[in-house]
Image (cartoon, rainbow, N blue to C red; front, side, top):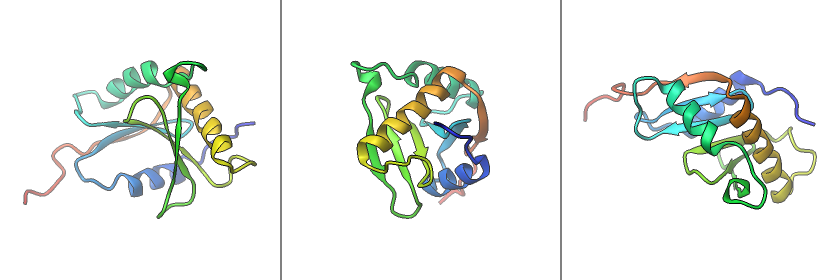
Amino acid sequence: MMTGVNTERVIDVWQRLLADPRKSWVLFEHGTCVVLTAPEEELAEQATDLLKKFGPAHAGSSAGDFGVIDLKDVEGWVVTGHHNDVLTYVGPDEPQDQSQIAVGLFGRSKRHRDGTELHVVHVEHKRGSADPA
């Protein structure tokens, strides 16, 4: 069973993981982050369009594929999918079974919910914020 995500904690995790001052990203309700490598004017709209296409999981297709990254500086995992810039955070307290397959399936289900519900909870706008070298 999936419980609510602590939004402030997940924002902090993504800020730590995506420390590049040029990376803009958008966080969705269940912990999925869309990194915008070519940010446009409306970041939330751009991320929503991307997640609508690459968020929902379809077993037996590339949309059902996932990978699990063990995090070094933060507790938990990042679950990847079939788009390199769509990443889902899974906290250490979320899945009861912490095997790679269970964490991956849990993260994929969170990404699927985010990809179908499409509820933005945070936008990290980094364009032009980096100091010139």
